[in-house]
Length: 144
Image (cartoon, rainbow, N blue to C red; front, side, top):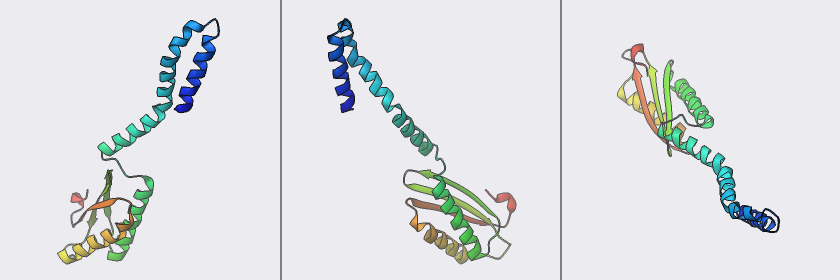
């Protein structure tokens, strides 16, 4: 921005010494418009990020890939098959909602707790705070 101000001063000085000396009074306003135009890409990127956050958009591709890797690891560790998964990110939190289809009378609450602990351990290295909602169901209709 300092370079922009210096360039504006230079343009005003040059215009003042030509037959267009009356136009030098508009240089300041024109340069403000140029400066604002230069800031548009940064403002647009900031607004895009804010809208995604407000709408609880999906986390970036790297975080999504990591969560999918964790799902695979947990499925292998606990012998689970079908999974439904929803992810969103708001601020410093990543919300992970995973539902697993299991056979009837095959899981106890202690087993489900172990599943949650495993998820939390695997997701501990994320740069965000994971909020987990892990569920088990025997009914495919109740999958997310």
